[in-house]
Length: 274
Image 1 (cartoon, rainbow, N blue to C red):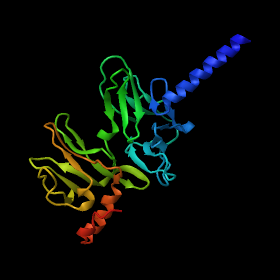
Image 2 (image 1 turned 90 degrees about the horizontal axis):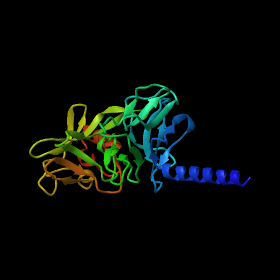
Image 3 (image 1 turned 60 degrees about the horizontal axis):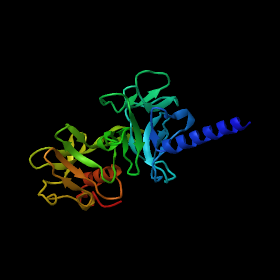
Image 4 (image 1 turned 60 degrees about the vertical axis):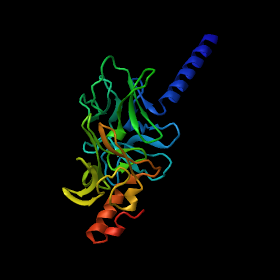
């Protein structure tokens, strides 16, 4: 009888510790399934990652949204152009150490971080209070192997960047959803144009609607308050980046409203705060 109680106690400690470790992580021995409504939540209960269907759509996506806002407000979507048509989705660490999304028993992922990882598989994913989903090396250094902040969708969160990393070739830009029911890549984009004097440009399709003006070292030569107050430039040799340092997210709904004003000839109102 004592041995049974001892075994129960050990199992209880194991499951409780496993739950506490896995609350904000996905690892080799902990994954999330859509049909079980499983999620992970950042340590400070700021952001949540899980499966969702936008608007009236029945397609399933993996996304990140604010944990404490009753209306689910996604700020990042993994498989935005590759939805799953049922609730069989599983998000896990695959055999190569990548974070990958699978549908049912399929062997090829619907979406993956898709990076090369040297050595044995020893990685895990974690959702941070910043809203950044990171893939980390599971050792004492916890090196960042991949991060969602490097692959933005339609929302510019605090401390995210926009622009080019000349060393890696990574171009961080923001694109609108196709519609409230479809988070696929839409026709509104906000990105930095490269050059000796880079500048941020708002596009509708391939047509530029607004430019920030060239960078003088302190600020852009022209631009609207809404954007002038929401960025600072990182001028490293291998980077041409703008950083959003403030606490409030800047979603592309701001830019969609701006386009309405620009097309109506109300340029001064284009980027007024919401």
